[in-house]
Length: 197
Ligand SMILES: CC(C)(COP(=O)(O)OP(=O)(O)OC[C@H]1O[C@@H](n2cnc3c(N)ncnc32)[C@H](O)[C@@H]1OP(=O)(O)O)[C@@H](O)C(=O)NCCC(=O)NCCS
Image (cartoon, rainbow, N blue to C red; front, side):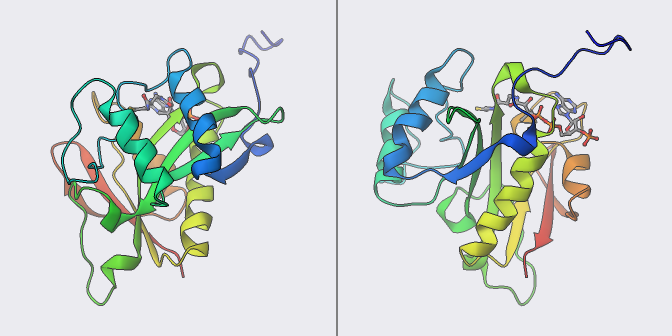
């Protein structure tokens, strides 16, 4: 504890991290992060995705295999965050929206839907939460989407006391980065948008 009684931050600060898009060469890092203690190894970030047959994978191990096949085939999936020792410590799912299941996204007049990207999930290892890594991930996701031709970034965060969908992030963190609400998705998620051009 610091002199002021606040808990000292553990692990890397958000600014020390390096973000890299997951691709076949980084599959082992993705696997390592998701299978580590507390990792989202039942989901494999397939909640907003379908397998190559357009189906929801349900059998044991099938979500992992479906995600691996998507990454192997070059479908953008998201960003891994690495600490100074080059260990993967966080994940942000960000991809062209049309590669994801539509969970309530909106179409705005005059835009090309193919150039809308979407953030659908965050995961930060438990020991390093509360240090701005989700917020940094939003910045990195916007840069990544813009570099890859995205003109708009959509997200589906919840209010901070929401009882579910917290992995989609929280509305204030998106507001701070220029996102505005354009709709609602289901009971809890707020559809938020930020232009990238
Ligand atoms: C939700 C999560 C991504 C937040 O990551 P984080 O790096 O701790 O978040 P940050 O430190 O960047 O916080 C950003 C903002 O969100 C707020 N926030 C973070 N966690 C919060 C929580 N649990 N409840 C309410 N607000 C929260 C912070 O207070 C901060 O607000 P501020 O900008 O006003 O200070 C992280 O707790 C996590 O990974 N949880 C598990 C999610 C999961 O299971 N994902 C896999 C699903 S299959």
